[in-house]
Every structure is written in C-alpha cells, then in structure tokens.
Length: 97
Image (cartoon, rainbow, N blue to C red):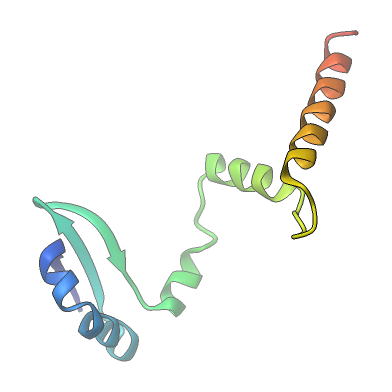
C-alpha cells in the first residue's frame, strides 16, 4: 500500500513507518506543503531500481569511482596536490603543450 504523509507526521511515526515498510512492504511518500520530498520503500524493492540510472547519473558515478581511495594514513593535502598535478599534466597534453 502506498500512502502520503506530511513531514511532521512522518517524524512522529518514523519507527512505525519503518516497521510497515519492512514487514508489510508498504511504500510511504513524505511530503511538505503538498510536494513529495522522499519515498520510503522496502530495501529489496529499491535494489531492483538501482539499475535505473540516467546517462548523466552514470557519468557522474564513473567519475566518482575513478577518484583515488584515501587511506587513513594519507595526508589529504598531499592527495589534492597530486590530483592537481595530474590534471595539469593531462590538461597540458590536450592543448599541445
């Protein structure tokens, strides 16, 4: 069953909403001033929709996954310097430098 709740009601009933979504498979749309803001869906249902991404979202995900993974011992400043240096080198080769 799908239903719409305003933000205040959803906040008050959040635990109950999670139970209904998890156990009954309900879908809850949370709205503010009549405008839908979010949808609570069962996790299994959401997993089936994860492949429904637009080409723009796919492009952004590729860029995100291409970023280097940071280890806790790495200095973030040094990582940024390396990224900027790589970008300068890459940019220079594109313009015939």
